[in-house]
Length: 138
Picture (cartoon, rainbow, N blue to C red):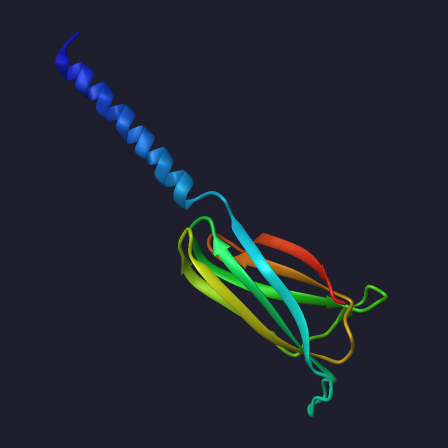
């Protein structure tokens, strides 16, 4: 076999291997969300809301994201959605694999919630849910 062909095959294998590694490192894996805490911080709020809650979480990207956005949906004991007074909660842009961010969100509510859906969207190629978890509030 010709040395040029052998070198060409080795280079091709190396390029495909490196390309696969880069793809797996940067474009697969989603998010990891840890240290989720939902805390009542004020129950005698002076505005129209009666309760102020703080939601904290550590978000680690396992792939590249152009933009991430978090939304919180609170529910009462009957399962009805509680309106919140914070339309824009948390976002991060140009997130790289391994990057950690501490999301700290204050939300005002007019009643006591029993659970919250934590939903994180990717705004890259259209809005898609990349993380969704329901947390019970005690």
